[in-house]
Length: 220
Image (tube, rainbow, N blue to C red; front, side, top):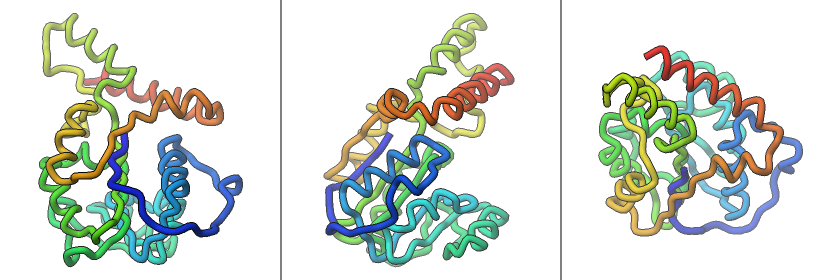
């Protein structure tokens, strides 16, 4: 899913997409989205950057890109890739108001105790006319069918979470509601089936992720 405030930026040239390798289909979609909108930020922020692979792939869209995470070990790995890193809690970003004109957040909001507070903090840190892109799992994704079946069989509505590490997963309607509370201009777009239909290269990775998801459901 994506949440995107309005278009901005001017056309620019960068590394050809054909020379890049995308380990995940959602990274490719976010890259293409930024490229299509001709984004070139002065200062960008990657929230939940982890070890920095995603940050590096998207670095061409900002003159400077800061990576942030709670995981100190992951931030050390990101630093070895030349990324400026800051350790922070996503509920309280340690930056001045309007500091960033591009913010990315991939597979992080579902781990947070207060997504609304997080989005308020992100909005505070965004400059006028800036862009936010969020990717998060859809609670109604294909593997949720097994999740529902197991809950029905065991008569336990709280059993078999889709991912035990996720505090809350959103469906389309929920993500729209939480986004609309902080942003006037946004849209929410399911991307899974759209990508799978065209990018056969990601099929092994997708099948592995589905298998891993099923295993996580059955273990809980």
